[in-house]
Amino acid sequence: MLNTKSKELYEEAIKYTPGGVHTSIRNVDPHLIFTKSEGAYIYDADGNKYVDYQSAFGPYILGHNYKAVNDRVIEALSTTDLYGVGTTDLEIKCADKITKNVPSADQVLFCNSGSEATYHAIRLSRAITNRTKLIKFQGCYHGWHDYVARNMLSAPDMIGKRDPGSAGMMDEAIDNTLICTFNDLDDVAATFHKNKNEVAAIIVEPIPHNIGCVMPEDGFLQGLRDLCDENNAVLIFDEVITGFRHDLGGFQKVAGVTPDLTTMGKAMANGFPMAAVAGKKEYMERYNTNPGGDVWFAGTYNGHAVGTSATIATMEIMETEPVHKHIFELGDRMRNGIREIHERLGMKAYVAGFGSVWTTYFMDFEPKNYTDLMKNDAEMYVSYRKKLIERGFFKMPMNIKRNHISYSHTKEDIDNTLQAIEDVLKELI
Image (cartoon, rainbow, N blue to C red; front, side):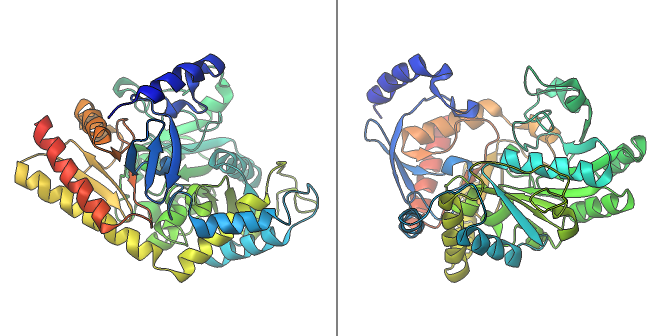
């Protein structure tokens, strides 16, 4: 594929923007300039077409530029937008839908990004418990703020150690965040014991999709629920990724474990900027949106007509059409097809996934935590993805990143991808 125009535009981009991108993880090789999207496909400035499995890290559960959602947004913007006072009918309808579908959501508040939502949930948990410490898990991502921006994609020698993700972070924030190992309840229990009556909350991706797809072992999420109850701590499920992609009720509904607070985003509005924090009424009413509440909650663009109308439309489509059935079936088709290819080629690799999400780890066992993923062949992982991009199948060309299937993908897309995967693997091995 020729990328001449992309290269020219990238040279222009770096004149005006540091690195030429507006969020750090977008700066990858090859650096493509995308100009068009529709359904399951994206197009670059040179006119190259790609079957998109990156899906902007997951928001596009229905597909790019999905007409039924876009039409609702356009319809809303023809009469309303943002007022900065009071409440709109769209906010009421959107909140009603979420509280009826998500088990933990007695009440909900809207914001604009997953990072905002986790920030608000953590602040609330500290107010509820009058404690400062937070437990998160090595490899999990919960946003860019100081509370959680540590021990994400740590180097092997920094796993479990003090590994802040950025210069400029406050020591107090870094050191009040405690790191545990996913799928290790003994480690979590020991951390509670060592920090007795100091832990405000556990925050967890119920499936750590930041590192691809590492599934919780049977009983792990319930074990976190029990440990929080025993230690009077708040359990926060960060369902920004898992939420509406895996079920209208979130992965908490699939797992049968109800957290105290839930953060949501990405797939809830099919690509439009929208996020939320939800939870028990007695906790949510601590926010100062409620007269007398003492936990600050604010944001000029919260509840904008764009996000609320897009969320209503997306949820209505998921309620009335076989969205999850379709994407789960295609997810199974993809995973099973890749496993058959590996078997034919005699390869040692593990195909991980749930529902519409999958990834291939180039290692010979199922990972249970971030440390296990140090066995993954990172060079092979990235080379494999880059060669698929050359053939018109876009997966993020970074180590241990997940792929997503949307309602707009077809069996033909999956089968064409499987053929490309087999061709690439034959070339690489």
